[in-house]
Length: 394
Image (cartoon, rainbow, N blue to C red; front, side):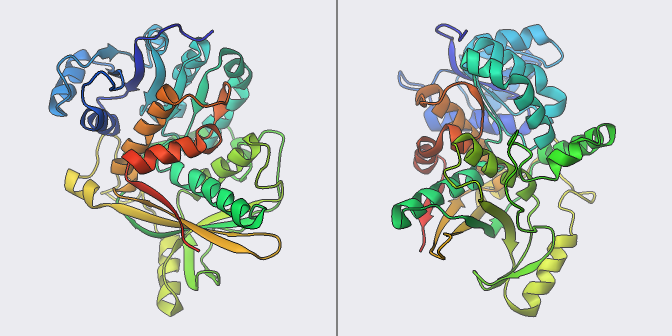
């Protein structure tokens, strides 16, 4: 059963961590304190640290603080019972997320995270889908740079295709045209945890290696190869593998699956990074393919991140190019005004949580993607508040 009259709209769990602090800071700066402001709280393991972060970000002194620890299931259960939405930045989720999801499902509490761990996501889907439907809990993974710009970008492009041509694109290319900023330390830690999980459970290979790893009982057509550089005639440029494609493509296909295949059951989708035309573009694409963005002594670590200036100077620009079975084409861009891994991500997950808390969607309980659950309502919030744009280009 859903919790009756919870105290809070949103509890930010992990508010003392680097990304969680940015989320709390965004909430304090964007919404302030007023009768119409969302009622939100900060949660973490240590009360003293919560007080320190609250003062550091300039949040009001009376901002509610909640002590909760993934090692203490009773505290997680209590947290979930007190709010409409739990927003968690505490990852890797395969290490610290099980009880948070379970508690939200028990209480009918909505949930958003930054997860890019498809093996764990599939395990949660298999374990909790039925119970979440019964309790009306809306559990929504991947509410940061992976995978909101991509999931919603494809969704909005498909709506544009249907409006123009009366049919969806059977093939969509996602192309990262520009990106300034860094991936989060949590992303790197999640990758490491996934590799360890894979060593213990080789069966995860099927989920991790398939674009349909998050669509139980459905496997669509073969998908385009995203592992090697290639020349893309549609944009007259070389393109290279994109590190986030393995999770984003799974979420896009799950959105199609959850919405009963508005893109069609033969839908193909890939994501790659644009370099440039000619030999220099080819060389750049080959370098990108060989590079390890998480390697080296300066690789990001959980709890660390760029300076405010670096976050504010970051940005990204992604184009989605759709083609119908008859060869009709259209394109749509998604742009963000902060670095993807921190500045933009913190705004996106905050608005996703508030969308569930304040703009009830017509969907029932279950384990969702942002596109399938919130769709256009979330797009409107992101354009209005979070510095994203979704623009049809051609």
